[in-house]
Each structure stands twice: as structure tokens, then as C-alpha cells.
Length: 313
Image (cartoon, rainbow, N blue to C red; front, side):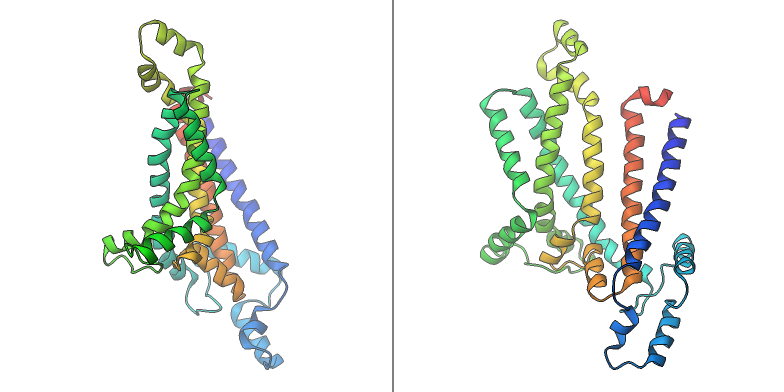
């Protein structure tokens, strides 16, 4: 088990190093000068040089990369070119929108997908199974931004049960959760469809194993065999999908955040790109990559808890 954890931890560290180099290199090749963008067309060369020095843009690429990494390690993500406040403050403010939204959407996705996937596997080859698979295929095919606009049209414009967008803050938790409900549903639909199909496939593969047939021969019903033996062994691929979905919901909700005008991390990156605020784009992207890699690492740990064979490696 210790060797397994050490290998995964080394892999996490190496992935972060490679990701930081790639992110910094990609930002470096983006055309345009942030100082020129901020000061406009009438800026003088002296003013541009002074602003580049203030922003730390006049050093070499290696010096700027090392300074950026050193700042990230100490919690200093730099100062936003546009907002003139520390990037860490912007990230913390937006994180309290993106993280609850991701958890909310993943919870809905899991609560929908697990019973549906188990039901489809338990009724393999019946009309119920075919109906569930058809519904999940439709859920995967529908773009979440289009589904989000339908939700706004029906629940916000027609029924007026929810607001069409915006976020009131966490001073009123019920109002905050209500504001996140439609975005969470829009994000959860395709994820629940994918997870349900994976749950069904993994469970069917497990049900074909010899030990399941032995359990059935000893008198267990199909439902008892699923609950006592098959379900836990089918969870490994499902955990992989859940980990990937959580990473996507944190890092990839930019479209939904823009549809509902949510001040989250995805919208912050979008604004940083349009405003040439490169330090925001670099830092937030690196944090999201770290979140993705960390979730993957935690999924690997969950593997070891679910599958005892991994603990002996």
C-alpha cells in the first residue's frame, strides 16, 4: 500500500511540473502585449515600459516562470492587471460559487445515475432497460448550454420559480442554493447519463463472473447478489468517471456560468482572456489543473479502498 501511494504521489508531482511548464509556455505564445492593451493606443513608450516593469513583464521568460512558481508555492498568485487586486482574492471569491456548483451538480448526477444504472442492469434485455438506455443516450446528446436555456425559459421566464441568472451570495444559503439549482441541473443531466451507462456496463460485467453465479447457486436472489457482491466490485470504473466528472464540473463549467451569469472560476478565466489579464489566466488555470490532478489522486486512493488487491502492491 505504501509503495502504491508513493508512486501515485510522485506521479502527481511530476504531472504538476509538466502542467506548469505547458501552461506558461502557451500563455507566452499568445500574441499581444498586456501593457499595450491596458493603456490603449495613445500610450507612450515610457509609460509602457514603466507598466511592464510594474507588472514584472520586462524580465526573461525563465525568470518570470520561476517567480510565478515561487509565488504559487507561497500562496502569492500575483496582482491582477485588470482588477488591481491579488489574484488569490479573486480566486477565493469565485471558488465559493464554482465549488458548491460542482458538488451540487455531482450530487444530483450520482443520485440520478446510481439507481437508474442498477435498475437497467437488473432488468437487462427488458423494455425498462431499453427505455433507460434510450433516455441516457438522449441526455448525452443534448448540449448542456441548450438544456440550460430551456430550463431558464421554462422555470425562470414562464413559471418564475427561479431567477434567470446571477448569484446573491451566501448570506442567505437557501437563496444561494436556489440560484445554483438550474445551473446544477443543466450540468448534471449529461453527467448522470454517462455515469448511468458506465454503472450498467460495469455491473453487467460483474454479474457474469463465476463468484456471482456461485452466490446465485447458493440461493441468493439477483437483487441480493447485486447488493452484497456485485455492486462493490463494479465501483472501480464508476469511481473513475465520478472523479473525471468532478474535475470537469470545476474546470469546465465556463459555458454554464456565462449562461447564468455566475461569478465563478470559469467566467473569471473567460474575462481574463478577453481582457489580456495573463496572470489571472495562468494562476487560475494552474489551480484548476491542480484540482483535476488531486481529484485523480484521490480516486486512486479510493481504488485501494474498494479493491484490496491494490493494497498489496
